[in-house]
Image (cartoon, rainbow, N blue to C red):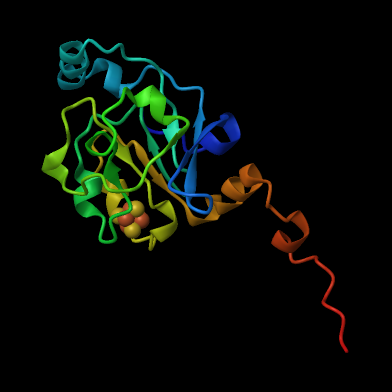
Length: 177
Ligand code: SF4
């Protein structure tokens, strides 16, 4: 089950994953049972850790990864020319549901084969650095990735900074002096 292309409309913000006050991505939920709950490598890796698989939701908005679909393949991480993604567990080795509201530094691995194990997830920790090349989208086996520059609107709405008038080009012109 690929990522829901309308996730910003069909889901709500359930968390905020930050680097600092200015750099963060939202997490959209609720999550669901998808590829990760059916994938044998992922199931075995969670069992080996004694961690339960729970619905996780979608990390990111303009560069969005459905963590319930993500099977830790890492093709997106390898494809990205500007290191938008990191393996989150290589920075903070916590159960993935704890990353719904977390602060990361961004020091996690950006190398495909350096996933901690198959419980790891590709985290779009630097989604604001995306150059919209779309390389990550087509390489993902379960189609867990959606990249859409226009989804900035949903990010900004969520941030409370979305300016409806400016977005429609209907804002009054600045005063001339
Ligand atoms: S669209 Fe390109 S730049 Fe953006 S996250 Fe994907 S691979 Fe990286």
